[in-house]
Image 1 (cartoon, rainbow, N blue to C red):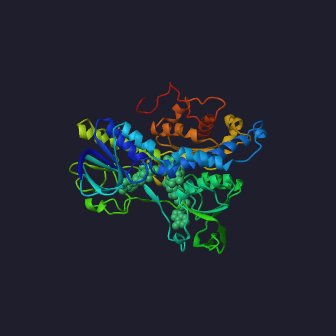
Image 2 (cartoon, rainbow, N blue to C red):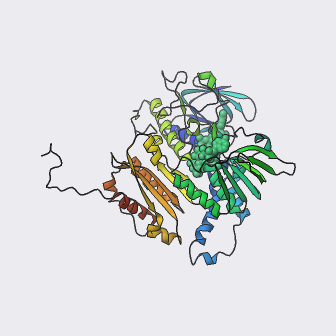
Amino acid sequence: MQREVDVIVVGGGPVGENAADRARAAGLEVVLVERELVGGECSYWACIPSKTLLRSAAALRAVQRVGGAREAVTGGLDVPAVLARRDYWVSDWSDQGGADWLESIGIGLERGHGRLDGARRVVVERTGGGEIVYLARHAVVVATGSDPVVPPIAGLAEARPWTSREATSVTEPPARLAIIGGGVVAVEMATAYAGFGTEVMVLARSGLLGGMEPFAGEAVAAGLRGLGASVRLGVQPTLVERRESGEVVITLDDGGSITADEVLVATGRKPRTERLGLETIGLEPGGWVDVDDTMLVTGAAGNDDRPWLYAVGDLNHRALLTHQGKYQARAAGDLIAARALGRPEQTNPWGAHVATADHSAVPQVVFAEPEAVSVGLTVAAAERAGLHVRAADVAFSSVSGAGILADDYEGRARLVVDEERGTVVGATFVGQDVAELLQSATIAIVGEVPIDRLWHAVPAFPTMSEVWLRLLEALGRPAAKDASEPESEEAA
Ligand SMILES: Cc1cc2nc3c(=O)[nH]c(=O)nc-3n(C[C@H](O)[C@H](O)[C@H](O)COP(=O)(O)OP(=O)(O)OC[C@H]3O[C@@H](n4cnc5c(N)ncnc54)[C@H](O)[C@@H]3O)c2cc1C
Ligand SMILES: NC(=O)c1ccc[n+]([C@@H]2O[C@H](COP(=O)([O-])OP(=O)(O)OC[C@H]3O[C@@H](n4cnc5c(N)ncnc54)[C@H](O)[C@@H]3O)[C@@H](O)[C@H]2O)c1
């Protein structure tokens, strides 16, 4: 069977859904191909379940840090109730809601595995059996996401390790959990399981949260230890064995070993491109898919003559985050519609049809204990990029709003400022409930707000946002110019 539509989207995660929706909203006929659940990894095995697993214990800790409220807490975490709340948020792993939404807005849902078969052609192996071929009048968008990597550590694959899927869909937390990795999944799951009362052992080959300012990983290591987890830095597993008893024994390169009931592998992601038919359009299967700022796939057959193939979300490896993928999808979906309908394109930097922020303003919230959030460049990344930067560092103990939020509030903030342009290029906040501070920093970076103008963005007293004032004070207010004096010799 063969069908022609305007746009084919392969992969119905949050990113594919958004691309489909933008093209559909412009009046194009769109079909979405999904082989598992509409809503993707994020909705069922990643963002949503992980955040619901984390939230209850975080709320409990928050209450326990406020005198007068802590006295009211007489019990511990109700783990079955936490899991039930997670089940509610993942709709018991049913995507009926997502499928109904697609139908309500007129996007066709084709359940099955999609693969490219030459330019503008997608073959779908239907879930119910048989095949259908779709031809795209205008564009194909691939948004197939990523899978966890299981590194080649001796015995690991045979030891039936958990990946983020098992960790986020758990029905009975184990008594002991070893975690290999020191990135975002590792620290979030360590925080969640420590909250459940599991004995957590983090094994990281370097520090935690490598992409962030070093103080973020250090604070999270201390926070996890405060929850009773063991955090071992600079160690590498050399052998993993699942014993007959069911226990997992992990031998480390420092000669030591640990024993756990389960081992979670949290060592990064790989692209879902192995059976995507990339070889039929001149690309190498198995790799990340390179795109330009409009999300047009680089090197795909026919793309230079008449653009048709776009890749959005994890698959293009620009930023493995739902919100950033959805941002890319809005740009690409709107551009596909503009091209199909002969409307003007806006592909200049910061135009409607490019994902410029991917390069300089990607916000990320790590929901660990404590929260660690960042946007833009770290000092090290800015220096690598050749910028001349200055950092301002502030402890939240100097912010009244933080002290009122929680007794003995601990946390830290850093702004990275480009000395030449006088604007913020990076920000990091670490502490309880800092996530909501991040958007202010994102706006400062994207808007390129001059530091001297930021002095006029007055944070309300007594809120956490007053950290901005402390940061500006740490930078020092630019000296006022004497209006009577000439600015330069030329002006004189
Ligand atoms: C534990 C964990 C927690 C996370 N938490 C956060 C968070 O809090 N915030 C955040 O921003 N990001 C988070 N992320 C990252 C986030 O999950 C991803 O960035 C996001 O899911 C990417 O969306 P996507 O649509 O590109 O891919 P996916 O969500 O992976 O969706 C891709 C879809 O394509 C389908 N598919 C794949 N191949 C085919 C094919 N050939 N044919 C048909 N369908 C196909 C898949 O079944 C899937 O439904 C987390 C990741 C993990 C692992
Ligand atoms: N809150 C959020 O925004 C959130 C939450 C979870 C995941 N995510 C996204 O999902 C992606 C995947 O997360 P992740 O934690 O799996 O990856 P990651 O890239 O954040 O961390 C990978 C970790 O594994 C370690 N590692 C890699 N190979 C190893 C090996 N062979 N042996 C030992 N250690 C090894 C690295 O040193 C690093 O500490 C991230 O890019 C992240 O942005 C986001």
